Length: 87
Image (cartoon, rainbow, N blue to C red; front, side, top):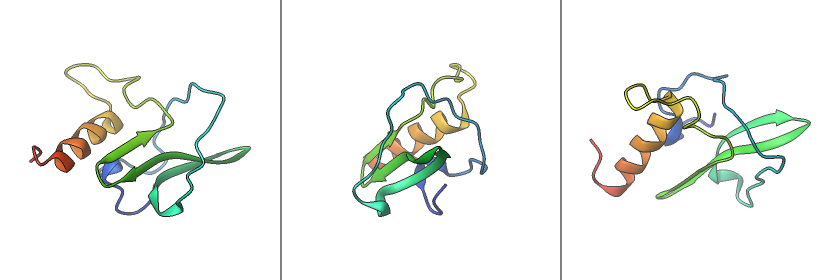
């Protein structure tokens, strides 16, 4: 997790995420990478730039309506904060 990444605010290092796809993201701009992981190669697991947030993994996978997964909660909070509607 890159220090200061809005998406991962309050999420502990080494948190488990679920990857579904056999392809992976490789950002052109390393400064946009919010998180990465090693899986035979270095995978840019998440990027953020201004009001755009993207994840290679599925932060909603283990979420429930009354108990959002911390990464899904971070995604929603980061999006709301960027839109000017967040608290």
